[in-house]
Length: 452
Image (cartoon, rainbow, N blue to C red; front, side, top):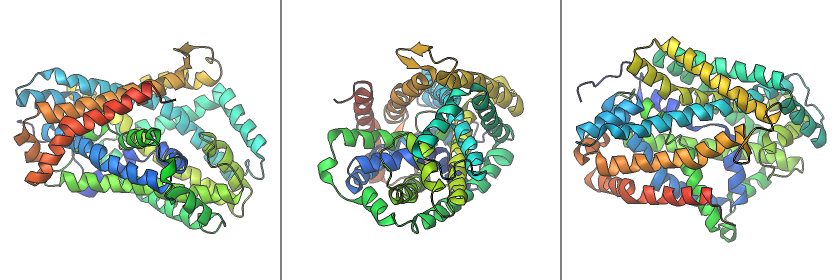
């Protein structure tokens, strides 16, 4: 390929790429979903299966996305099309990039709404509104928030603007600068909250809940959950990692870099669980509260503990930072495409795309109030977009990326970028051709047809 430098710019260092990609991977799912599903599916035994899935499926596909992006130095659509052509295949493979970028746009539309909820709770905790509230009062407060479209619109708009501003500023002045500040802040907040959790009196119980090895609870369904989460947690299948990879320096090792990202993402998820569950257990609450864990149970717990207002505020700031870094990565691939394909100025592309996803977000927030009667296949707009992206579009994109990397791209091109030993490269190739597609296909099937 002739073009070896992205017109968007490049990361200042390998570690900036690691932090940016980790920021993309670390989101709301890491803070509450991973700890919850770990505790409900065998604890330590589930973690072992999850780590195996990360290594066998998640890491190999992430390596594929990074090398495709770095070799082409273009947005996901053009990267896939150009590399297919270079490998003497059809440029129609670019459709994977179209589907991935569409997934990112659709996800952002409802992710921004949830990001708005988090911003609301930062203020609610900071001002003491959640002090000494009962579980019923906290539930009523969350219900009142969802029922108020104007309040939701205000927070959704603010979160959207925060994201658009960073993306519009570009790779170095925007995403890189934000990453340098937000990711260290996220790690510091996590450590502070972990330290606080150790003082609550529920840390030993929280540790046992997360890490006891109960293989009796490790069902086939639990293994499917582990495989599915290992794939989604790394932001695969939506073009983000491909776009970020196009800004990666040539001399950086893709294998070591991706392993580091996977390790950091997993550590954040585990530490988040150790920060959350001791607070829950110290207050005698149900750790299996699902989505209500973050917006009902935790505010009640923090509101009844010493220094709870301070640490409750810090917790929601942590969640807000995680949501913000992920949201930025959802818009970047499509903005890069608009800049490269239509020669748009980045600020124009960012604002234009931002207005589209903001408008779509209004329909999502309306799912809880003025548009609650609008359904698609029995689901409101919010739940429908969540379902089709997580259960269909992302896993399908992952399968296609694996097949593309394993069967379409010439081995010499992949090896040139990955620079692996002969044995490791063969293992990666087998994963792309067989292991990953089959594993994800199984997950896709059971996501659509759940086990009873």
